[in-house]
Structures are given as C-alpha cells and as structure tokens.
Length: 87
Image (cartoon, rainbow, N blue to C red; front, side, top):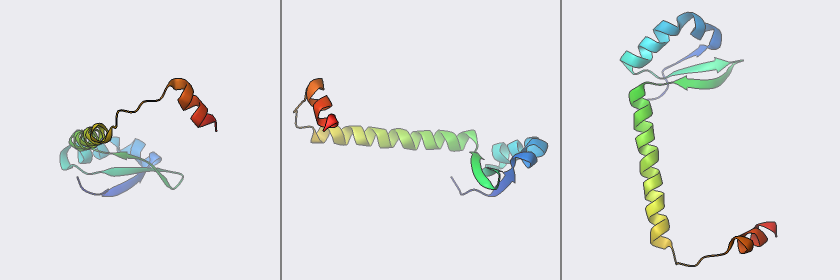
C-alpha cells in the first residue's frame, strides 16, 4: 500500500467519478475526498482494503494470543466489575 496520491472535492468527485474509480481500480491510487476543505473519506482499491483487513486480523490474533498467554486465570463476577466501574 502506498500513500494518498490525490485529493478531490465532493463536487469534483461527482463529475469525475468514472475517472476516480478507474484510477483506484486499475492504477491502485488512493484518492482523498474533501468536504469543506477537510478530508472526509479516502477511496481505495479492493486489494488495498483486503490488505488492510488482513493486517487488522493479524493484529487481533496477536492481541488474542497475548491475552491468553498473560491470563492468570483470575475471574471477577459481574457484580464485582460493576462495583469497580462505579467507583
């Protein structure tokens, strides 16, 4: 994955949608969409999205494994948790 190559306003996006999608799909560009001068969204290719989702899943699996590894077996009841959160 690369960085964002280009930005378009929402107005430009409406008039250039076909071009923006083509650049994203075939050239793999990441195109930011701005609204009122602020970045509102980024259009990415399906391949970039899948890579991001794989990365997130790998992080989740690593966090799960670390949590299991550091689990000392101690448990608290729901009432104990509520009391702790209330204080």
